[in-house]
Image (cartoon, rainbow, N blue to C red):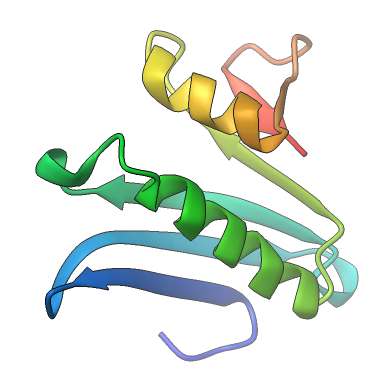
Length: 102
């Protein structure tokens, strides 16, 4: 995908993809971004690769104009929720689903 509204990053280790992130930019001048997907291979989890992908993706989104970011995560996905909170995302209690914003 090659357009001004998406960011796709991959993390490689020993020439193998071990993680990826997809971010969609939207709104006037790409002012918002939505993290569509973050994934790290099971054997590489807990080593900081997800955090690096998210921070790199948010940095790229900011370069393209994003001032706000959000994502959805399963309420019972405690590991992911803890990661997002450490990065600075805050649970939006007014939503019916689990939505984090930074």
